[in-house]
Amino acid sequence: MADIRNRIGVDVSGKLSTEAAVEWGVENDVAYIDTRIDIAPNPLERFTDPVCEAIRARCEETGIRLGLHTLSAVNIAEVSPYLRDAVDAYLRGYIDAAARMNAAWVEVHAGYHFSDDKQLRMDAGLEHLKRAAGYAEEKGVQLLLENLNPEPDRAEVHYLAHDIEECLFYFNGISSPALAWSFTINHASLTPEGIAGFLDALPTDRLAEVRVADSNGEYEQHMQPGDGMIDFPDMFARIEAAGFTGHYMCAFGSLEDMLRGRDWMADRFPS
Image 1 (cartoon, one colour):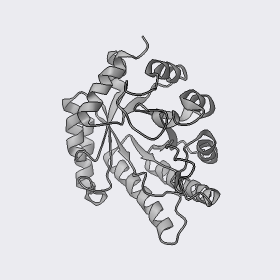
Image 2: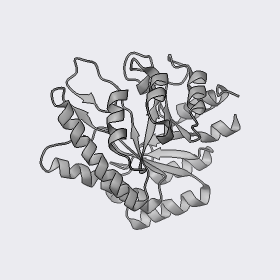
Image 3: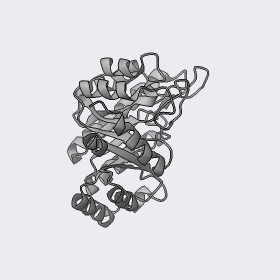
């Protein structure tokens, strides 16, 4: 139990400043911390060289593994003039900040489409991510592409990389070692293939992170583990059997909820 508990991190997101998130991790014995640096309390512009160097030094001193998480609301599949250039600048900004603070990863997304422009958006997003992966290689930064949730069929807007076919489009199209996979299990649980189907079809040799929350199996919701339909012992067994030795990341509720969920999941990890 102790080993798996040490491998389960917490997505602090924008609940705390990045500096406070690192200290919170130290105080609560959480070695893996995810944080977002878009807006207050972590506006991207704040992360100058001195700020990043102080965060880097503190993480090295304490052993905290810090990751950065881009905002899924930013459409990486942007095609419009000016905005498509802004997408590349946005991703470079995160990569530069990660390099300066020696962050262990940057979580990225494939964007979204508006139903009748799906292929156009997929192609555009692929090119944006290719450029980001190339830049990340130069900077020594690891990108993690997250599988996102499906939206209702009648919705106009749909996240990309929500099912196996779409995920493979990006992983087959980008061979760079700078792009790995962040597997969000509650998103996968909303697809017909489910968690097992994703593990069977996607490149588990590129699996670097597993994001955990429970699900009602019907629509997007990040529930407390144990409150939904996901079989956590089975999920852990399947993922570990695939050779995964990386970290799990709590992404639900409050910080206190995630600490409780961390212990709950550790108790259900296969012995």
